[in-house]
Image (tube, rainbow, N blue to C red; front, top):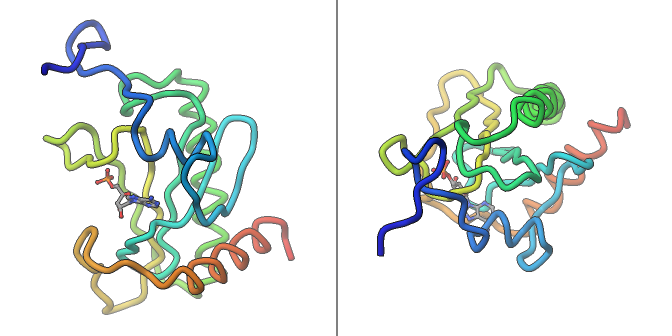
Length: 152
Ligand code: AMP
């Protein structure tokens, strides 16, 4: 079946059954790092680097194209907060921040999200979706990031 088109009838429309929508509704678990009225951040279960965090809007946006600009501005503010905390917690030498749109752009989960990946000099990223991290490690990392965000 062809997906309904949106964004001036050029792109597929939002599917409320995507994995991140289920996380936002509490139907699937997540290692939460941050939540406010407009954004949610949680650890990627198949991290490409330790501390790999996903930042998502609560609004039902599929890609960068269909989010309200004010919600996008908030998402970017939260992404910077997470990035600053991640550098401290993971003693990072740098950061990779990525965002993919539609399958052609590398997107796999069709709810807008920004990847924040702390980087160490000389350490390559793991391939996407290659290794599922131990949940106890993710829980510990999420707690450390959340504490850093609160300035603890
Ligand atoms: P992409 O759509 O290509 O930007 O990436 C989707 C990301 O979501 C990948 O990095 C996956 O490892 C990650 N992912 C998929 N399912 C979950 C989940 N249930 N919880 C956290 N991260 C997930």
